[in-house]
Image 1 (tube, rainbow, N blue to C red):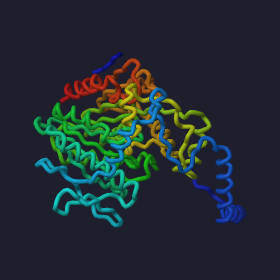
Image 2 (image 1 turned 180 degrees about the horizontal axis):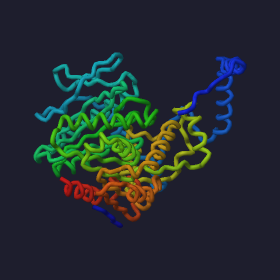
Image 3 (image 1 turned 90 degrees about the vertical axis):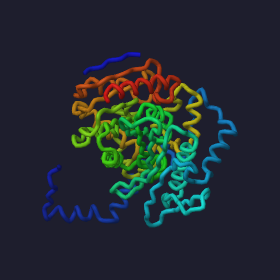
Image 4 (image 1 turned 30 degrees about the vertical axis):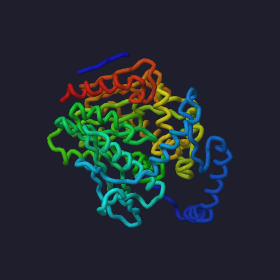
Amino acid sequence: MELASSSSRAPLLLTSGASGRVNALFSLRALKSLVLLIKAFLFFLLLFPFQLGRTSKRSPSSSSSSTPDKSSSSSSKDEKNHDISTSSTNRKTRFFRLPAAGMVMVQNKRTANNNAVVVSGDSDVASRRALAIGRATLDDDADDTTEKEVSLFPPSRGDTLFTQSWTPISNGIRGLVVLLHGLNEHSGRYSDFAKKLNANGYKVYGMDWIGHGGSDGLHGYVHSLDYAVNDMKVFLEKILKENKGLPCFCFGHSTGGAIILKALLDPNIGVLVKGVVLTSPAVRVQPTHSIFRVLAPIVSFLLPTYQFRAANKNGTSVSRDPEALIAKYTDPLVYTGFIRVRTGYEILCISSYLQQHLSRLTTPFLVLHGTADAVIDPEASLELYQKASSPDKSIKLYKELLHDLLFEPEREVIANDIIEWLNSRI
C-alpha cells in the first residue's frame, strides 16, 4: 500500500437565393429520409456492438461463472414479493407520500391503519422501488443500533428519487456523510458501510440517482449526468437545512465520485462540504475503441437506450470476493445488462469535463484506488491528486485490489482508513 498526503456559435446567415434550397433540404420528408439513411448505416456498422431490447445477466467473474444456487434465486424472488410495511417497533421507518397523477399506491398489509407508500406508475420502477423500500424496512427491524428512514425526493425536474438514511441510536451525531453509489448499483449496497459510520457518530444519507435502484427512469439509463449532478446539489442543500451546524462530508464511488466532484466544482456547493472521500473515481474514462468516441454523440442521439455490448469488458472483475460478486450480480436492483449508449456517452462527457477542471478542486479529499482496477485506471486518481488545488489532499493505493474497494476481502481495512480520515477532520 502506498500513501501520499499534503496538508456560441456565430449565427447562420442565408441569402434569399440559398434560403429556398435550405428550406427544401430540411423539409419534413427530407429529414425523415436522412434519419432513415443514418439509422440504416449505423445498424450496418454497429450490428455486432449493439444488442437490442435484451437485458443479459453477466457472470460475476470468469472464476465465478457458475449459476447461483437455487436458494439464492429463491431468496431473491421471495424478497421481490415481500409485502412493504413499517416497523412494528418504536423505531418506525418513515415514508413520505408524494401525490402525483398515475402513481401506484403500495398498501401496507401488516398493520391495520392505512399507511401506504407511493411508487411510480411505471411497472418496472414500481417493482424496484417496492423492493428497495422493503429491504430498508427489514434492515431496520433487524438492527437495534441504527434507525432507517426512507423518503421519496422530488427534484424540480419532476422525477422522483429514492433516498434513505441511517441514523445512529446509541451514539450522538457529530457529522453527516452523503453517499453516492456507482454506475448500475444503488445506495442500499452500502448499508454495512453506513452502519460502520453510524458506530462512529455519523448520520448517513444515500440517494439512488436517476435510472438506478428505487428511483424513476429506465433501469441503467441516464439521459444526462448533469441531472444527477443537480439532484446531488439539491439533495445536499436539503440535508444541510435539516441538520444545521453539523459538518458534512461526501462519499462517492466510481461514477458517483465523478458526479460529486462536478457538483463540488460549483463554488456555492464546495463551501458547504467539509471533505470528500472517493473510491475508484471515474475521472478518466476511455472508450474501448477510438471510433466509439466519434460515433457516440450521433448514436446516443438516435438510439439512446440501446445496449452497447462492445463497451463492456468481458471478464472484467470488480472484486476478489466471490460471494460479493454473486450478491451484486444477482441483485435485482443492480442493472446487469450491457451499458446503454446514452449512459456511456454521458460518462465520457463528465470524465472529459473533469479532466479539464481538476485544478479547480479546492475541497479537502481522500482518494482510494486499487492498483489492479481494470475498470478505472488508478493513474487517473494519481492525476487527480497531483492536479487538484486542495490544500488538504491524500491518496491511498492498495496493491492488487480491484474496483469495488468496499466489497473486497480487505473491506474492513478500507472502511477504517476512511473513518480515520473523517475523524481527524471533525
